[in-house]
Length: 292
Length: 331
Image (cartoon, rainbow over all chains, first blue to last red; front, top):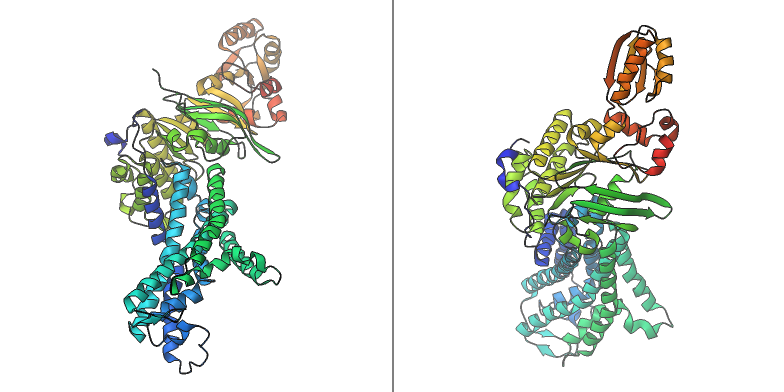
């Protein structure tokens, strides 16, 4: 450590104010951190591998006599576009919320635990900017998991059964390009409840300072709501449960499009997401960073 | 207009339920100081530094960095301030360079352009592409300094920067801090390494049980510690009687080591002159009368150890600011 004398630029900066970094800069670095961590790929790997397993299993299957309950299941071999719809149906209830919770529950708590939160909070970004960057990064990860699953399912389905017209929940037939558009629109609509799960995960991550607790807590919360929805006598609250909003995208795959469940899920999810995110923000602003 | 004080804390309190971690601490770090912040484990040093950096909220009181409150003004109050509390922490899955790129991006300005330079200063350039997860403790400490220098700080807050370093690393760290101070950077250094503080710092605060027991110039503290003297005479018994009768002569004891013989006492210089005359008048020959300036370590233990130890080995009160209760206990 001997070159300081030859380092004129390291002299104190004086009182001139430096231009402070934007939230976008902090967000980009949150994404880079996610990209650099192996565990990030665990969730994305699950999102990608499950559609492939599904398609392989369907190709190996000889008996198709029990698929009459779902129109996409019964048409699975007639159009590859039925595959992403079925995968969204299967993954939306548990697997995709779990994948989203893996990062959302970890994103603040892990940094608090290993001490890097104090490192970044003593730089030139405000706590609010760091929080916004982390919440956006967790949401981005959830969205990537959903669309990765959709893309893999679409590619695998089309490769197996062709890019053909598809039959909707209403029984009407839509062309393959329109079907493809509807598939991705359905996934986009599913993001409404999924990002709500992310907000709850970020709240638990911020408040508990415990990654495992926050991940398990987030998943446990959705399971709890799911169980509540099954209890006889509580039918009245069922439309307001977060887990019921996981099927909001069905309205897009009807003819004509049924926007009502989408609008309903938007405001019901907002009732969960906005308070959760606001509470997380307040906790993050005022918390003592004593970890590490 | 003169620049605001680098660190100014008033009545800082941090309470964790029943535990009072920091109890009305006042700090005054002036521009250009190399300010030692000393205290035993659990004295409240790190908690105070965390409050200074806005990482934890004070229960009471305020702290300002260059006139700005980091709790109210957030990152704006940290302009020109850098450092670390406890061990510096980095992302283990990123290389040193990537870690610094991240921190430089979060600093804004031209911080990122200084990365090669700061890596060279801490001699980590050859390992810059290696993941920090594989770094030794000493390398992480050096990377912590590099991360702080990226911000071109006017105030550097370092919490135990030499902890875990080997002797050569400690020497290098001391030299680096000295050079930074020579460049005009104000340094607030929390340390257990008392010789390091004695060598580097011009002003100190000593905390114990969450309270400041001394704040002021290190030289004043050492003077207040009383200049100790050791006397070897032709007749220690008669010398002892003279010492006890002589005004201005305090804390007379036998020599610390029996084999050394002689007597120890504390006194101001003019009183020592009068003593030598009195000894001569009493027919006691002086074989040796040598000053023994108290070390920071002596003073630290006198200030921070229990009342029992303090009662027998007090530090006279002088210019420095000491918690009044403690002063009276000792005096």
